[in-house]
Image (cartoon, rainbow, N blue to C red; front, side, top):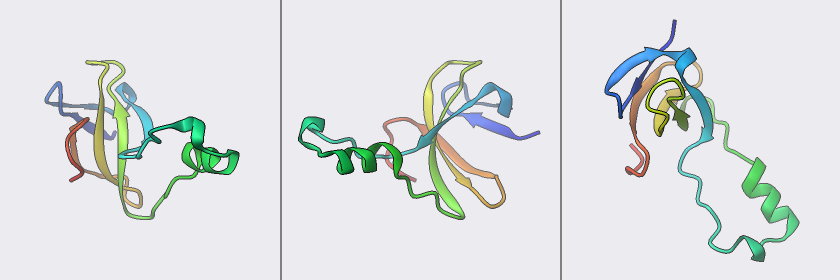
Length: 90
């Protein structure tokens, strides 16, 4: 069983309590109405999907319900660290 540390609840809980929320630290457009269709598609759907260390957003759905960021190795599926949303990239 994979255990994930919630930085808000400050405890490790089973993976089934969490939901993946996509890649973390995505810069949102300041004025989406200025984007053409290709730029909008790129913002919504194109992600880096790296092999190895990856910054992700997760939500503790069966706990505090809050989003947080995590650094996970996509090869080993091990979490390096988790930190609160809004904190700088680690």
